[in-house]
Length: 359
Image (cartoon, rainbow, N blue to C red; front, side, top):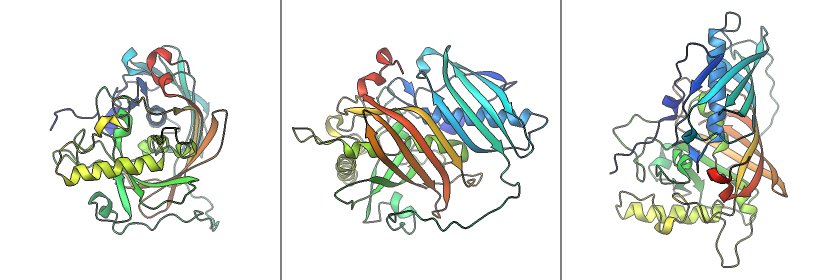
């Protein structure tokens, strides 16, 4: 197996600055798409900076939870250009919650995030709304470990191969478990997500690495990196080529990876002809570029994190490339963890390359 190892996102967010009012951070090139850092990872970074700033503050040092955040993206963050400078400003300081604005520069302003910090241990009113997912999600695998063991006949796994210079490096951080059965008309995507950076770059779990887990600080990354539900609305090409991010194509990729795995191939995640664009993403018509990400955390994950998260993503309308992606994240017991809304623009995939990035 290759000695290449993916950057651990938890390590990348393990920051040590004298002051978080202003600090300099080098983002890893691994967690991105093309030359650009994952918007969800940059949003996770702003959350972490806000919490670290609050921890150093004499008044709000007990506000150790992110209640909600609104991130706005003005320019792409490109790690190859060097580190980013991050500045934190106080918009509102309160006893119950405070709002901090985190700004990311490289050297121009790239991202702002208004982060509301609080303490989830503060007492408050809790009401039963009776809300449930509709339509109902597929039956939860029991146990969930049957997914990773490939023992559940109703689910399959797709895991993008990780290449250090590959276009879809950031997608190699997530193992996607999706149902085998779908309706003719797909209006939303349901999937279980498992961390994928504790695997060999093109193969299975690396037993020499600790088991990776989803933590509270990585929730924005999860919200941004589920399978692209909007690709299920893109028409099939005249030559019959399927939209590479849609469920139909993903099921085909998963089937090819399964065959390779059953044949004992170590690099079973590498598809023949780079069909999924792991190396060169030439086959995909469009990508979504984040303009804003807005989310509220409903439940804190345990400090040690969790192995599995369930995501439902839905797009209600796409007009001239304008769309909003709703994402709901649930824990292993199907309790609601995060409610998210991402405003995005669908663009030609080539615009994600550095020379054409003008977002």
